[in-house]
Image (cartoon, rainbow, N blue to C red; front, side, top):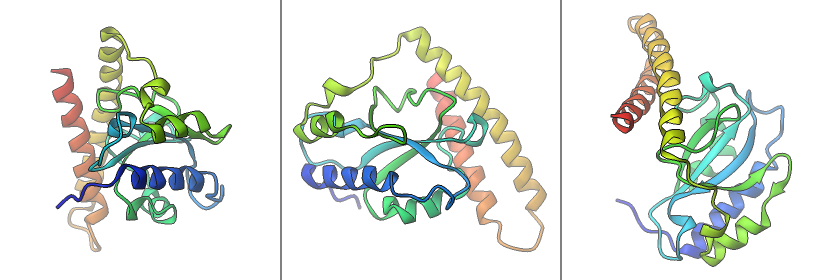
Length: 197
């Protein structure tokens, strides 16, 4: 059961995550988070929210972060930043592609490795004026092209992860990492397929 989060509490969690993004040791993980974007309900007017939606942009190539998947080490990163203990729904992205798509609509940049926390975005979210800091909406052609690109990446990933699952299917040891990866990749692919239909 989802318990709604008070606006001020959600903003507190978001601020804390932005601060922690800058504190994670560079050598601790096999990837770095280079940007934190906020999207969804927290860019609207203040009210209780069910979830805090964020996009975490990594320094990994596009093929290592297909839609709705998590890079290797994401669980440890989420634990070290308390992302996993708070009401976040995180989408992992690559620095080599736009952060936005059909679900990450008009996000606002909250933190970057280059510039730290954007006080303008933080104040706008806190005040309920997130509309002022959101990115511009893509044109219909830009969105279609974006979805086509993501679908290509997702299909390549689905084939790769399906093969990894098949190769490990009857081997000793836990199959959970492979089955979870297959589930996430399939979910992302089907979501994109539905969006392009």
